[in-house]
Length: 261
Ligand SMILES: NS(=O)(=O)c1ccc(C(=O)N2CCN(Cc3ccccc3)C2)cc1
Ligand SMILES: [Zn+2]
Image (cartoon, rainbow, N blue to C red; front, side, top):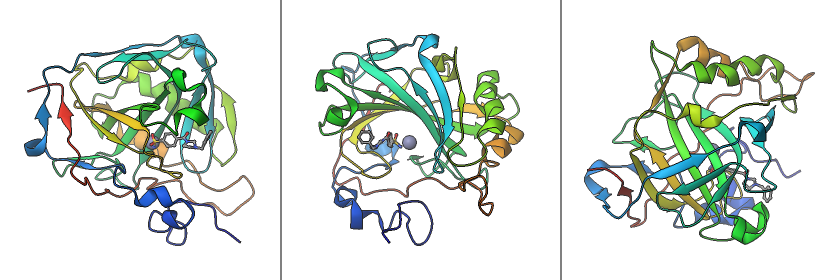
């Protein structure tokens, strides 16, 4: 039977192109950001998120990540500015992380891998709905925030990680309300931006990436909580949900712009 895609030897990133040909495209993500190749673009404006905490709905474990889902039926929580034209609607946030603190992020910055990477996924309502947006080059915008392990963890991450106990296994979902994800943003608004793809199948090349330069800190036990999630269902053999990151993809001549010098 067609094995559903995942991150294991038999269904991992090297196999994805068999069912999802886009995976071999020339605008794939993630990529390594090399500061020497980045262009400071003075025309890039600051980005702005105006999120309604009431839009948060649920948190779930889908066996591949931990995801918080928001109401995106109208312009309730939106991202504007930066490289974007118009307001993009926040649909969900999720994370990618490693089995140890020295790796786990998808994008790599000058050789540095972070322990995890948070993705806030937004779509362009001019394309009608999310399914339509992912067929357009300007359909989706993802803000990426790097997580590093440190001693002064952000209390805001606590809220997501406290919910982990209720969604330990695949398919588990819990209410997750009154949450404004902009509290997860670091102080600096500096970012890199480039055009790329979903880092998971179907790997459509519809994403304007906005990667924040300043990482946020999480504590060692917060990372341990994330790693305590299981990719299996409740009554299946335990299998830790870790290393749900895609390896680096070829840059293929793409230009990465920076909002800062
Ligand atoms: N890691 S990432 O930020 O690049 C990212 C990866 C996947 C997704 C995501 O939600 N989907 C990709 C397509 N998929 C299937 C789908 C669902 C509804 C309609 C149509 C298609 C959903 C969003 C962001
Ligand atoms: Zn992601």
